[in-house]
Length: 267
Image (cartoon, rainbow, N blue to C red; front, side, top):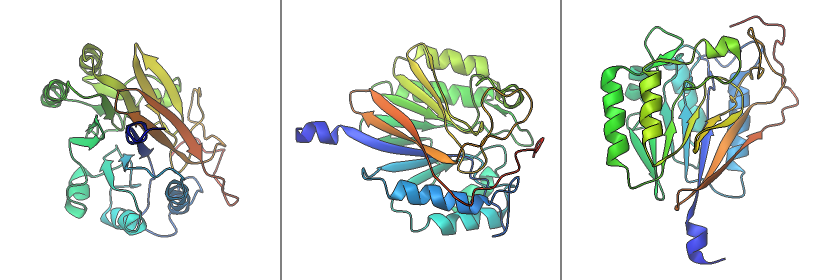
C-alpha cells in the first residue's frame, strides 16, 4: 500500500446521547450512564486505528446542569482524541459554550472532508428545528464548501427511522427546506445524527443516512410506543476517504453489569 493510499483515509468517531447526570449516582431508567460512557470511551481509545476526531452529537447531559457538563469534561479530559460537541434537546447550548469554549464550531475539517456541525435544538421542545436564519446559513455553508465532500452532523433525525414515538420528536421546523437543500447539493455525502438511541442506516438518493446508538440506554427499533432495547451502548466510526467515498459501522461495548428497566413506559 502506498503512502498516498494510507493518508487518504481519515477515521472519525461519533458518540451520542450520553445523558450524563450531575451526580455520580445518577441513573437513567436504572442505568449508570456515567459508567457506560466511560466504557465506550475506553473502547474508542483502544481502537487499533487511531481516530483523528470525535463528535458528540447531543444530549451530553441529562438536564443541562453545570454539574453534568463538568462531570462530562472531567471524564473526557484525558481522552487522546480531539473532540467537538453539539447540543440536543436535553442540553443547554449557552452553558456548553461557557464551560468549553471553541468546542462547537460550525465547520470542522478532517482530510479533504468538511463536517457541518448543525444545531437542531429548540429551546423548551423535544423536537428539533431550523428557523429561516439557520436555513439560510446552511445554504451559505453548502455553497462555501462545494469543493469538499460534506458530512452533516446533528442531533435530531431529519427522516423517520420507523419508531413511531421517537419519530414524533424528529426535526420539525424547516425539515422540508433542509431536505431540499441537501438534495440539491452535489457534495453532501452523508447525514449522521443521534436522538433515537438506535442504529439506522439508509439512503436519500446517493446520500447516506445514519443514526448512532447511544452511549447509554438503547431504544427498540421499529417500536410503536416507547420501548427500551436490550442492545448494548455503542458508537459509530467513519472511514472518510479524500475522494469523497466513505465506510461506516457501529461498535458496541460488552458490560457485565449492564442493567436497565426494560418495563419502563418513558423517561
